[in-house]
Image (cartoon, rainbow, N blue to C red; front, side):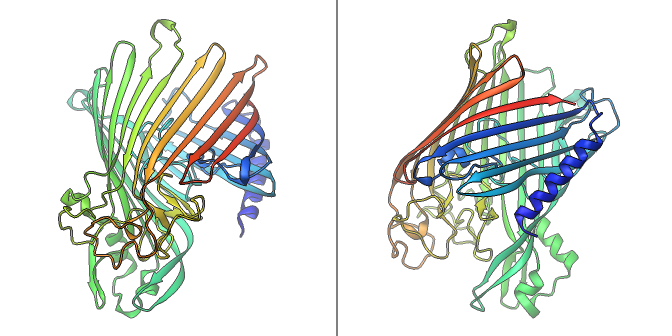
Length: 494
């Protein structure tokens, strides 16, 4: 079944749900129309990043977005409740497409939630509204269809004087057909693959305290059909394979020596929150892991660092800003520097994988931070190695975000500046990666890039929201481009 057919079926189901539940006062409906243009038929960075796959077409285009959502009762005192959400986007321009952006059903029993379908998801400790993109799942791509059991919001434990709280999830997803390379046999297979995902985060500090500490981890694995991939040397049963996937245990048999099953990726996160009289401060850091280098602190230099300030607007005195965000992303190390400790693996080529050809991606687009890029938008004159799907994963980036309101005009501003160094295969720097002839296919060098975004919104008395969205790229990583869109949105409850 193609994506267009899937989208049509989802839209039909959405309309049917709308008709059946039209009398439910807890239903929220939103419709939005956009029209605009991008220069050079290229979509600027911030118009395609962290949009959950809801992206207009290149060049001149028109878009229609519709959503229907039923949330849990606001009181939260019901032991059992249910909700659903559907969102679809239709694009018309140089071609056309219809995409299911979100479509899921959920039920809640106490603090536990069971959800099935496609959701808008960000995984990792960060400021989710203004972030440049979380390491594991940034919200740039469409959500992977999955079944998930979670404690979605922090659950304050009644013991120890409400000093501890936690949240987490456990999910199984379907990635569809993925290309898998077998270097031993010099061939490539197309096999269905799955996603395993889990997370656990804790909070230390009573709800009334000014200061709170956060810590936790998330772990994702792409896996599936190992017996077909490895053939007769693979002796694990499906249950044993799944146990190896969720625990990260290494396996050996024949030519398989000390290999983890699947493509593992995640982050270990820490954070601190402090509430002052007028503002709330959040500091956080995401530490990356893939092949085990973090256990040896070999890539501890790499990470996403964030600093968020939220205006509490106390005393009903509205300021010009609601929230400010500063982030610094560094991924150059990868346990491949000359001084990096021995880890048992040559280095960690972020988001790339020797077995899964398209690495940490879904439907051709990366799932993590968009600063680590594929060939799709990067200038063609910059070198790339044919075995690497992500051709720029050594990055140093600074990011700023702000949202607020000037009189009756709301605004959202994002700006990012980065230095980009390609990969270890396309650099002539001294390294400990044991790669054959690094830089032989060209040297990426140091490439600088600036990308900006501004959205303005005006709420009218009729409930109609009018907006203007602009974004641009300027530098040597992407082709210089500019995009401008007008939007009109209307939301109401049924």
